Length: 391
Length: 59
Ligand SMILES: Cc1cc2nc3c(=O)[nH]c(=O)nc-3n(C[C@H](O)[C@H](O)[C@H](O)COP(=O)(O)OP(=O)(O)OC[C@H]3O[C@@H](n4cnc5c(N)ncnc54)[C@H](O)[C@@H]3O)c2cc1C
Ligand code: SF4
Ligand code: SF4
Image 1: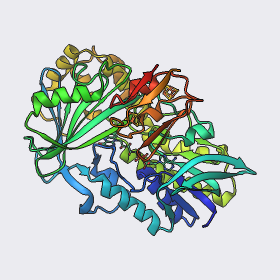
Image 2 (image 1 turned 45 degrees about the horizontal axis):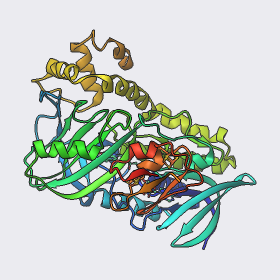
Image 3 (image 1 turned 180 degrees about the vertical axis):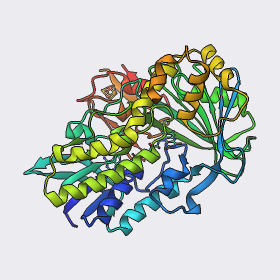
Image 4 (image 1 turned 90 degrees about the horizontal axis):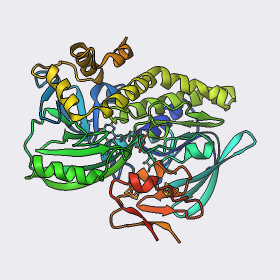
């Protein structure tokens, strides 16, 4: 087995596959390893993503699109409805993916670009030796090491690469959404929309979502902050299901944690870059992480190429990667962290009031920015302190 | 001795507990969670985070 690489990418989620694909396309010698035996399984995702984010990096393939949506319906604790998005079908802005297929597709693109891929292969440690890195791995039960110039840690929410490299990405109890989701069939909803239910009594520190998956099935899930919830997310979700969708049958359970930490100070160390959930790149308000993971993987792949060309794998050189993600989605991570802090503190009555202030007409665009700007316009005094975030 | 016990019938191998462990004391490989008792400080972060309530302190 080959044991010398320019880049070893740890984890074959969207971040890892994009990093490996990009680095390999740039002529680097790349190894992509994944600890699971099946890439993409089990799924830990509600699978919603903007069309634009995906189109930027891959050609759309219907095999991994479960549904398309035109907008979102958001519900305050008292049931007040806010509608965002296009008025009509034919203007779909969002995809609900089939990630089991999508993640594999991305890994195949990495392989096609020239990366070596190993599944059922876990990274167990990294060690710096003479300016390079030795990655220890366990592949189908056999231990082996590979030498590499650069490690890209794309090992998701449970990332240990950061810890090994001295980048502390441990999440505090107010920095992770503890999530449970059911794939539910036989329920009644408008399949053109995603749904969100807000409120401290419904989902403390988070929200309940419904993302359509075609054929009257949907991902119905919940995220709560362990620092605020006094029951498990499963208990909150079960209560909601009983009240709202008692007729639904659950055909799949998804469990997971989403980082909602906001931007970390640095995602690099000597020879190491972190991308995607490993770098806590998911959004503190929406919990969405697919789009940022893909972007971060792409950025890390391009910086790896430059570093290899220059023969410089120091943290100072790799800071270029920090600059790229911070100047891109880093700004909205920062803004949305502040928004999250503000909104999770609101009691249900305040949320009701805010929702009522803009209920009744369609906001047009489906985005956090649009929603918050409308709220600020109608409630300048209540929200005076977040107005400046958008200037 | 007190330690964290794992209810493997509940655990959905999601890795959230690993994300909140400051002490690199747990590890998830596929469906199998391991807690390294030599490193575990019983800080309870994982117990509070687990979406499935699969972890608890065992006396
Ligand atoms: C319930 C839930 C709902 C969500 N809903 C959405 C949504 O609707 N939209 C959205 O955009 N995002 C959503 N997210 C977030 C999204 O799933 C993640 O942000 C995204 O998967 C991050 O991609 P990634 O490549 O960084 O990590 P992952 O997709 O988690 O991939 C990491 C990979 O690394 C592997 N790995 C870990 N450690 C090692 C190791 N030591 N050696 C080898 N391999 C390793 C893992 O097995 C895994 O395959 C949701 C998350 C959850 C939990
Ligand atoms: S957080 Fe709970 S369900 Fe998830 S891996 Fe840990 S013990 Fe299992
Ligand atoms: S109790 Fe604390 S130290 Fe022990 S495994 Fe859980 S999070 Fe880690």
